[in-house]
Amino acid sequence: MEKYPLEIKAKNFFEYLLALNNLKANVIRDFTDFERNWMLDEFKGLEGCFVLNECRDNENLLEIHRPHISEQEKLPPEPNRTFKNWINFDYRNESKTPNVTKERTRKFENDEEIPE
Image 1 (tube, rainbow, N blue to C red):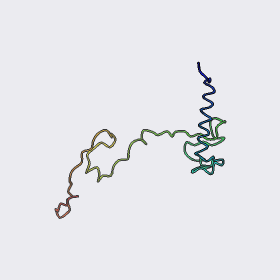
Image 2 (image 1 turned 120 degrees about the horizontal axis):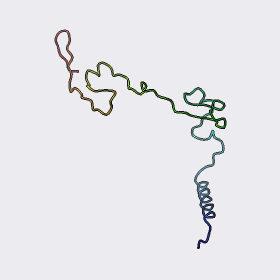
Image 3 (image 1 turned 180 degrees about the vertical axis):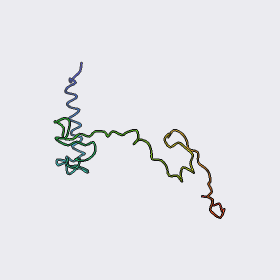
Image 4 (image 1 turned 30 degrees about the vertical axis):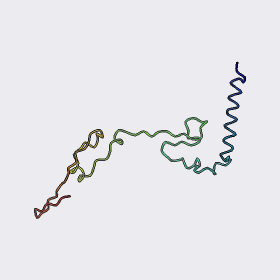
């Protein structure tokens, strides 16, 4: 038979954690004392952030929604022509390993070839 019921054990455990926390940590009573803090006005105008009466749920002060990224925006930019000549790869398929040309030479008007 248990000496103390589970509710008392749980209460004592959390009282212990609270006392331990109070020994090690300072109590911050003003939010401006934290390392970083933001005012709600700083979120207005940010994409995907809704503040106060802009929120879908009236009980919320701040809502942050993930932006919608189209398939076109997910594609990487096409590499510069110079790089395309050095590396043979499909830049839209990142699972393929590119084939890199070890050394390329540039031919000038006087038929001189210089390694790049």
